Length: 200
Image (cartoon, rainbow, N blue to C red; front, side):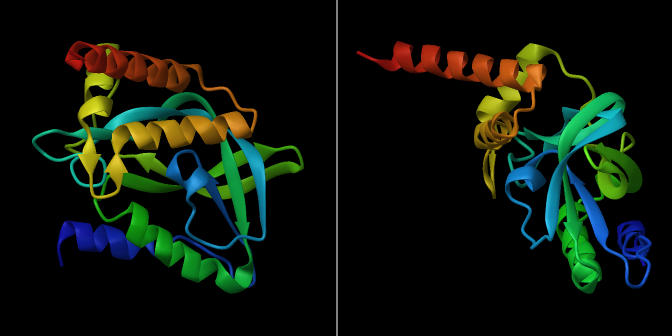
């Protein structure tokens, strides 16, 4: 059994008590494309982690030659996102779906985290970036972030689209994430300037 297979098998053992609902914390594409039915959703605050474009994408939003970036939860700070409640009858099915979606590149740890909501704290499943992963980008300079977002195109679309969808849904929820909003503005300014140079 390979190390990745072992990790995925162990991940599927993420504890779900029989008869208990599953809570999932979404901070990126899970906010606007969860891919599963849920009984409830709330805005949640997670302390100890922040949302960051800290993971190079060689498949979904880029290629090995021209990598894009995807979001991860990295340590430090705090993050507002969406907490979904999945009814107990569907909890294991949704957990297995999330493993196929989020864990297939071995780039995240599955963590049980305490997410604060307006109706109290809930223990939720969250996907935290593995800093030891070879595609972990860390805290990139702004210029490098812009470059990767502009060039990144993969099997699920462009990196710019991924960024814009995340910002749009944060806006709809009334949540602020200054760095992501600033990054989108810089990307669009750079693209507009490049397009202007191409005009006759």
